[in-house]
Length: 174
Image (cartoon, rainbow, N blue to C red; front, side):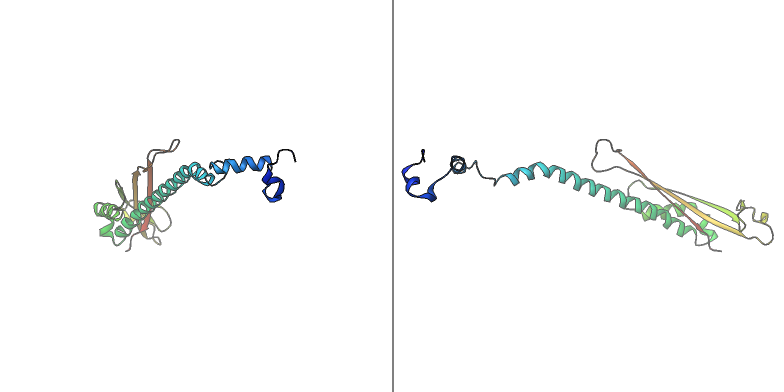
């Protein structure tokens, strides 16, 4: 035991290896412990977590807006499918659709009515006599909605605007 001090020579528990002594000295200065490593790891990973959280929130908002645009088309079609009188009132059908999607800005709607024979032949709604005898005239209302949504965050490689579409076709009650 060449390099032992007197205290280490008579007390075996006080012996330390050179490596142990170096660790002990570093820990006295606060450099040998690993208490701050979790803070460093958090600092490195935290921006990635924030980016993931923002992406998930943005995706959820776009999904909500897409559902709203689709439901708006259905609401307009329900209004138009009540009777022949409401089916030809395209202005109020479009108004019903845009009012249903009040949470989404910039929603526009277009409404169209069309007729077919029960056999599947397409006819004009003004010429209902063109269906053959066993066939009857079926009237439909179609509502298309569209909205352009801007995301809250712009990521590289992802579009800066999203166009959402909705469509609903319902048969008019007779």
